[in-house]
Amino acid sequence: MPSVVGLLEQHELAARRRVDGLREEADRIQAELAVAEQEWQEWAIARKRVGTVLAPDDGTTPDTEVTPDPRDADAQSAPRDAVKPKSQVPVWRQGLTWSVLSVDYQRILKAVADRARLHQGPLTCQEMAAAFGMAVVPARVEALRSKAKRLVARGWLAEQQPGRFTLAAGVAGPGGGS
Image: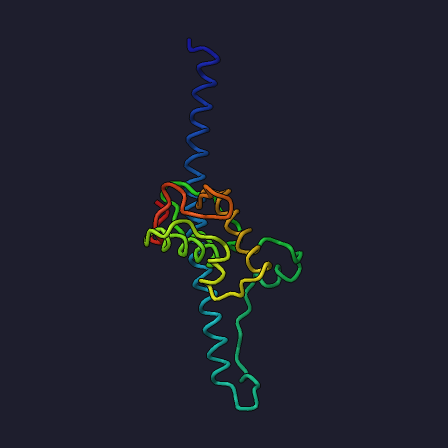
């Protein structure tokens, strides 16, 4: 007859495997959702731009039929400080691609990766702001620093010296997270 402790260990191991499998599936679905949301937003922006281009000379936009998104009703009733899609930064792990991040975070990673590729050393937030065409003022620099620190905390970037950012070990170019 098997021991009670042995049976508990078997059940614990089976539960752990199931949790790991579900987490991997959730990460895959979240990444796929992020890509689909970005595509949807790009089409919405394109539709708005076409509406602006086709607008009469008086500046008014032509009457167009807009299909409401069912999520908009929920968004109106949601609090203003609710989490925006893709605003969370997942913890980096082997195989996780940059596409799970918002465009702002991808842009920071690309700047740091380009700097590393050119063997120019770590990147500061002031240099990032200048590279992005932003005014190098404290508010902009601190916003970038906040995002870079979040990427460090989640394992995407490394900060060996205060305020100087590089890609974390294992994180590669925009084609993938590994």
